[in-house]
Image 1 (tube, one colour):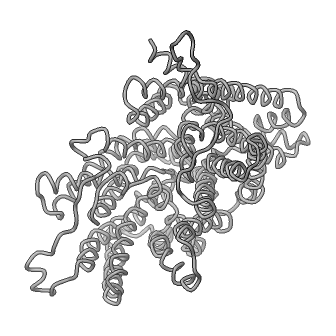
Image 2 (cartoon, helix red, strand yellow):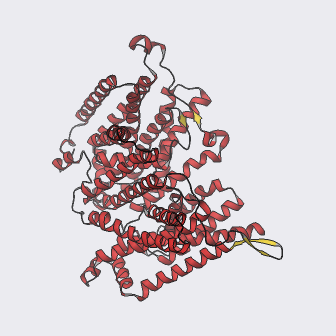
Image 3 (cartoon, one colour):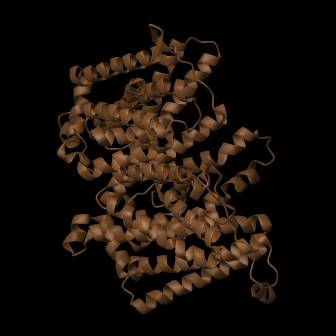
Length: 333
Length: 303
């Protein structure tokens, strides 16, 4: 990554645009081969990929560990659901608007987090991940408590069906998630390649050195949090559009799932974020594929994916902390 | 007045348990420089072992000591097989930055937590089950009125007091305890004076494992046992440790009782739903006003 980071602004944008177009084409190509179930799974991959990118930016690039991304996703999800149900906005308006609220949440979190480091930040964000969803039960009339708010991606507009043919519900889920994932990828790639990305990496590597080089690291940390929160909020908004926005949709385990994906794939790379997301989303299916012939009790099959992804996480940090996509990073070192 | 007494007694007995959890976190932080987010996963695991022994007809006290022992063994094994290799890997490229050196052990401990919870689900199923208490959970009756203090509360407070005294004696009177304090103070100097720091690290994991298992045994009679019931206890314990000062054992105990009181009074005078927001408020207030905690030393926030 570092070798290309001296590029001019225009060519950075061009590189990111090419990446995004290749990504979009690949997803469309693969999505067309899949059956309905796997198309829905692929849509989940795209949605969570945005969330994992929020961790890549925050932890991988700027070195701040947050366990509360699930809470920020909940902010995005609830904002979207409230905009759609109360103001009957289309999701194409509601989702971008809801990003504003998650950015504000990120600003508040960032102001607090800029003073914290390491385990303090991790623990505090974990408490936030637990505390925020309980607000849903505190203000029953607005957030409808444990029951949650029902929203979905609805149906495609008339012109879409006339031009591209009538998509199935699963295909439509995929088509809704894809443009957002593409935009997120474009922005993340741009930032990683640009001066801002270099600045954030310098904070991660050595705060004092960054400060001597003229980087105001407290302010930059807040910026990272705001950006990371918009990614998490966007991911959470789309995640809720799968049918329900409620406390059970954004549990603490969701935050940990995103972190697992980011670390498994390679916490410093966008490719790694995507690989990691594919692993955690499809792992249960792969396990069933391999062990399908054995008669496993429900008790075992329910917990096996969590056990294996946790063990993979431990093995990754102990053996190869750079993750699956890490080899490429070593080359550029 | 009765509500006040009830809140006070619940706060005391819960506070004693949170003090143990916070103490476990502080011991590992001092010994290894890691906040162990897997701690209550370890406690959950050994409480399940105790529960299995009890359902198979063994006595409560046998199960009790078996759980403490398995908690200590599990803690030591996790350090030897996961955390020690990790701390010897500091040369690798990803770990070269200070911020990632702090983040990676946290990620590893979350992996351990996830693995232990999934394993417990596979072995013992995810349904909640009860856990017996050796003492009655009904209030004492004096002159016809039922007091809010139960004999189980007395049991909890006295067991925790014994545990705290034993830990203090261990750290101040035994050679290993002194070696551990020296390691906590300065690892390099301790190493140079001939202390086997790897061993003191493992012992701090073992003690912390036993302490948190004790907390697990004491809290499950009032809250039931399932693979992730103790997550919330970890959050409270972490907050208690930060409130008291992450590197201060006395602070951990103090923080535990403060959190016990806060939670108990919010439960009685407000609603239980506000408990998490109250914990978050306490945590943020401490981090903003006095980040090193009430009794923490100035350089406690080493990362």
